[in-house]
Length: 114
Ligand SMILES: [Zn+2]
Image 1 (cartoon, rainbow, N blue to C red):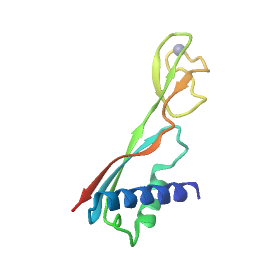
Image 2 (image 1 turned 120 degrees about the horizontal axis):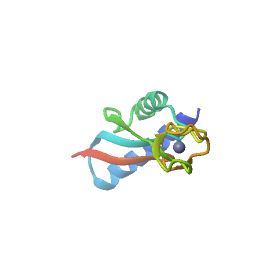
Image 3 (image 1 turned 90 degrees about the vertical axis):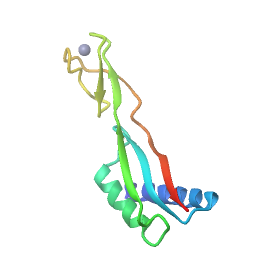
């Protein structure tokens, strides 16, 4: 499962960071999830909880922060939040918005307890 391998690498990163900082556990993990990252937030959250079991990240709260991609319309020059590469302009109905951003899946912040 795609989300499980992502979850495992996020937990690895959190544990590595914890060891480097010399803390005892991680209490919160903030993760940016782009609207085009191809990740189901519910599924990722479930996998994070499973992957964190029996690690110092076990009791952490996982905060998934949605990051919307932006689509810019070449016809009416308006910009919109989009969640698909194939979005149609909600302003004028033209397809082919120039889509940027929204591909991120990354840890934005970790809260480490002593
Ligand atoms: Zn338009």
